[in-house]
Amino acid sequence: MEIACIGAGYVGGPTMAVIADKCPEIIVTVVDVNARRIAAWNSTRLPVYEPGLEEVIMRTRGRNLFFSTEIDAAIHRAEMIFVSVNTPTKTYGLGAGKAADLRYVELCARRIAAVADSDKIVVEKSTLPVRTAETIQQILNAEKKPGVHFEVLSNPEFLAEGTAVTDLENPDRVLVGSEETPSGLAAAQKLVDIYMHWISRKKILTTNVWSSELSKLTANAFLAQRISSINAISALCEATGANVDEVASAIGADARIGPKFLKASVGFGGSCFQKDILNLVYLCEHYNLQEAASYWEHVVKINEWQKKRFAHRIVSVLYNTVAGKRIALFGFAFKKETNDTRESAAIAVAHYLLEEKANIAVYDPKVSAAQVYQDLGIPPDAVDEQGRARVKIAATPYDAAREAHAVVILTDWDEFKTLDYSEIIKKMHKPAFLFDGPTILDLQRIRALGFTACGVGRG
Figure 1 (spheres, one colour):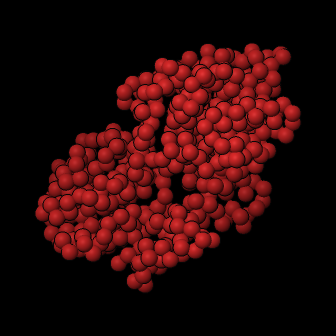
Figure 2 (cartoon, rainbow, N blue to C red; figure 1 turned 30 degrees about the vertical axis):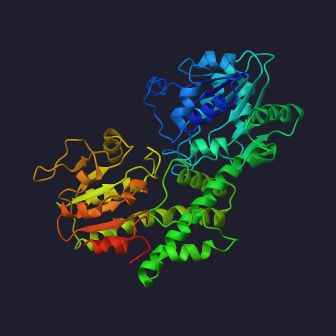
Figure 3 (cartoon, one colour; figure 1 turned 135 degrees about the vertical axis):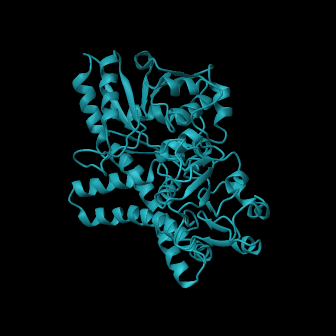
């Protein structure tokens, strides 16, 4: 059997690598129009950092896993085609700011229909609005060659960046949605058979295609809601003297609530949460469910408020001005164990500090300097009125903190927990300030070293 995946991004690459690893008899080809991305997948410097991914790639690449720009050839050979292209939030026209932009999905459907000369199973892997499968099926049927039959399945990913390989190898569940027709159920079974190479059948859930599509959006909305809920409580903790970690521990001990996703922070980021919630908001509005739309929209509003609140606190504590001051940012990825910066809270905080005329020094163990400058929209040679660099990329956290007025931790990298802060404070201006966004440090210990230290949800 041969399968193809159109889209070599954060989902397509790791997912297909694990399928190839677990199913050595299946030929897996990942294709993309981006030749540089494909070249990176074929190199020793992968475009995606995930713990364990490099080892999986090295075992499978060239054996039964291939990365290519030859899209038509892959479509022609494959029995099953995964669509894993970008579905960003629309920035224009109807639904701008909320609805998913499905242009790349539509282009994929049209290309598959134009190339395919035999029956194909098309699998939605991208996160898509409810009833997108219906649209894809209509396009395929309208454009297909005579005698060719297509079945469309929904197989949403439930990956957490930083643990993607583990999530793929040992998932909580795998969801396969299909039309409830004999041919649809037969197509679903073929995908189920692939996953059963390494996943128990009890963990593979089969539904109708609409339930599958909506389940992905709903899962991310519920997770994001928990983060926004604890972050809203973190503000109350700061105002009253409570400790948000202690509150989270107390409520998380309730079996009905549980402890996961109750870690206060600067706010959630990544490619999915905000995009999927806004998509859910748009769907609710489309079906005239305004109260439901408003409810989910406030999850995003709380998240944006938390970022601004944290940035405002930095300026307030630093005597209401950071102009001309150097601020060291520890972390730029949206979470640890990934180089993904999409919707990272660090970007929002950095923008705010730059608007307040601060200069920043950024250290992140996996995010490249080019990515930082791109995300901030600032050239590497930008300087302030005194000729000092507006944004400096540091090779180590110690370099970032040299001559800084404050250290701001924005990503929960484990290495930030074990730094020698007694050495860091020696190189900083006094008084030295530290702001713990992901709540990973013992602030009493940090204060004992001489820092003025603040944390989210803590005094």
